[in-house]
Image (cartoon, rainbow, N blue to C red):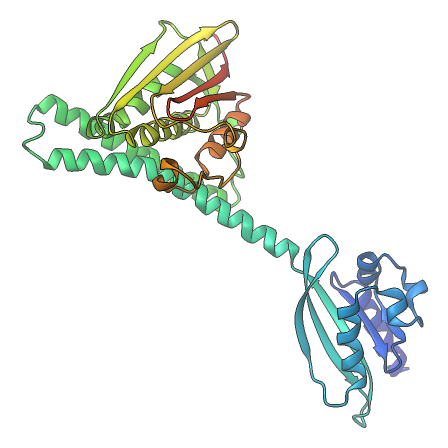
Length: 354
């Protein structure tokens, strides 16, 4: 009775495991084959039992490992990562099976799908990359303004100094909100920004803040920023910080690619067009060749030739912009000519504030 109970417990355990488990005797005949193994190899338990391992599992390397463990008296526990199917990694653990008299009579294999762990690791890496990229722009601007304030020979006007300090304060507050949002997300209180965090936002106000943020950078790079915003622009339904991130990323790109030329212009316009608002940023920078243009929104895509290759970066700025625009039903269009500059237009649904 005790032996029967032990076998029953073992069957329950193996049948309810998430990992695939199977066992063979020294002849290669399958003596245990749980439901997870059936799902992995596309064979039911009833069909697999008492069949030879090579007739059920068509993976030569896997069969060789478990057969060696079952037949070789000197073999010990084996751990190995194998790739199965659609390039899915599995950790396989093989345990030689022996009787109480230590006579080898087979081997047991347990296979854990590592694909889910890889997806979690990739998501975490992407999350850290996104946050690092978003913190970079305000930190760069703050550093630039602080250096300017420390250089007393550069600006001595108290009003200008106060404006710089206000920008530093605003960007510090924005970074604080980003960090709080990150912490909320890690605690599970918020998975992503959505329409519930959106408000009717003044485009002109947010765009002006983004332009002011890069004013010092533009001066140092000898780039003229020209802003032309229509009066009484409609509102955008968005999270203000996310909208700021969109403009900051686009202006950062324009300044970076125009700065390579040591001087240039960036024209920034905002105007209503029917039921939408269009914000256009046109630079006189180095431009993007036609072959690279279709891929600029791909995550981590970077040009690896010419002047653009010297600028560094992670290649995630435009992918972040695209995602943020998707969240608020916005779109983006880019046209460019190598050596002649780039034009970026972002289009938002317009809302009237009652």
